[in-house]
Length: 118
Image (cartoon, rainbow, N blue to C red; front, top):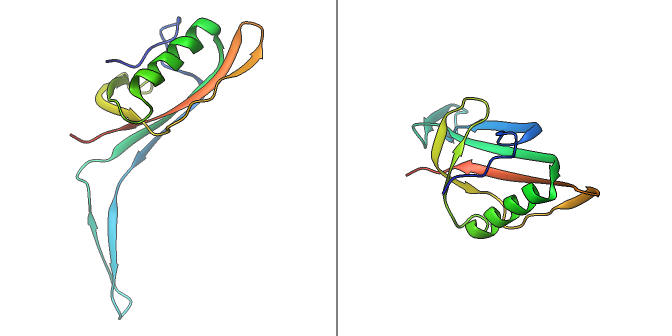
C-alpha cells in the first residue's frame, strides 16, 4: 500500500515538517565521565504532513487511508517530498485523525508518519 497523493501530485501542503532522529545511549559514571553509543545504526525519519486546504474528496481519501491503516497498526510506502525517495516501511504515529471544515468544499487535517525498521 502507498500513501495517497493530492490531486496536484504532492504528498502534502505547506508547512510540513521532516525530522531525522538518532537514538544514543549515554552512561554517566560516578566520576562525571560519560560513555555514549548508538542504539540504531541509521537514523529514523518522521514527517508531520499538513493538509491546510484540501478538497472534500482529498480529505475523504486521506481519512479512508488512515482507517485502512487502523491508525499506527498498518504499514505502507511513503515518498519523502524533500528527497523524492520512497521509504517502503512507514506507519502512522497517531491513533486518531481529526478533519476540520474550514469553509465550503475545503477541509484541514494533519498526519504524522514515521519510518519503521525492518
